[in-house]
Length: 62
Image 1 (cartoon, helix red, strand yellow):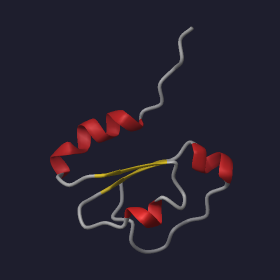
Image 2 (cartoon, helix red, strand yellow):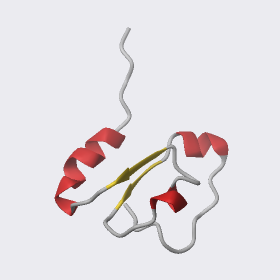
Image 3 (cartoon, helix red, strand yellow):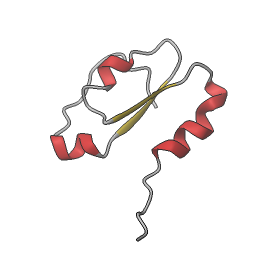
Image 4 (cartoon, rainbow, N blue to C red):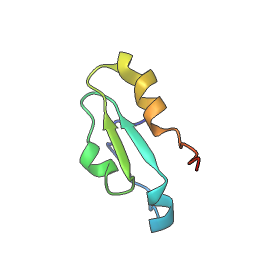
């Protein structure tokens, strides 16, 4: 979870593919999109529980 402001760390392509960010209100999602494959922008901090649930990796069942 971040406001997306400040230093953006380096993320290699394999790391970027499995990285997600939740950007809090008044944040900068465009900066997080540089290093994350999934970026969710919250308009209300009370939405945090469902946002975190969306970022949890799911197992594929055949």
